[in-house]
Image (cartoon, rainbow, N blue to C red):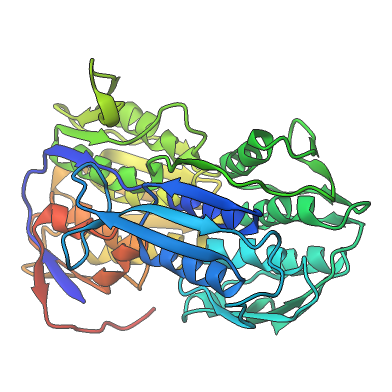
Length: 461
């Protein structure tokens, strides 16, 4: 799908979808539990639907409840109803039962792939995982090597899907470098359910995206699952013999998704008020709002009286110019696309540093953002672990073209970043593979009044 977005001011109130990271973790935990869990207001997106399919394939029974609910952030289905709840009857450890499948397709969801790989090592039935074109290029090699140290057998194509996994899980001490935190989260979720008497010891010589480990540990702590963690997360010890318990609760709003309407506010001036976020949540992408403040935006949290379900309100606006700076995105590499397009409208250089792991996402996001910004007249400099955007103020994007073409590369965050960037461009911007925004934020494009165009494919760099 290709869309054209014309420049215009963006302001108003936006309710943010639920967190993909929380939604997928809660789905997997509920599926592992022995009993019925209720997950309220989850994210209804392509990635979470992929996770639902995988959990069903592993034996969990998942019922979706929909209703007309104006406070729910998910997009309506054909009956103008929205997903408001998952009821999950867990398998108590993915024992073989009705619905159990031996080949599981994770779609585009890397989170589902990595977390489910470790879970699959808990049982002796061989399971094969596959996915879309991007997933077939995303390596799980460090995770598979660590699982091998725990007695778990695997076969793959150089660490990439299709991957076959077969347990059982045994005691062991493994070293697990984590260019993506999802490798470590996978072991943390699965290891407690290893057989009683086993001990999983994990040394972590490299850890990116630390806040996502804090998120995973919050679930272990909430259920009093025994574990030991070094203060710097360089070592973990997890005894087996525990079990996940059924639970009921709501899914927090997604700071990763919130970055894009916030990006639009920074580019056009706003004001934009974002509902559905919790400033106390551990999500690392909260840093984006600190970054916007340093670049010249006004960022204000408020909790209105009698706010009820609306909770906190976060308002972003700008009256003066944006300025560049240096920002370490190691803990939140998913911010790179949004940060880069805001930087394109800033005066001076903006360096986004310590982000080598942004190259192993759905695309190599460092190179992709540099190439696509340069199509629009913005000069960039990349190194192995950084991207510097040489901003020239509000006239940066699209000044030398009557029709700007951007290839979204099938990467949801690239598409959403350039959709926001189009609002301040000198000319309309056309974006290819725009349908990929639905991976995490199904109704995002509708915020910007897009014009839908015939499909047109661009050369892949």
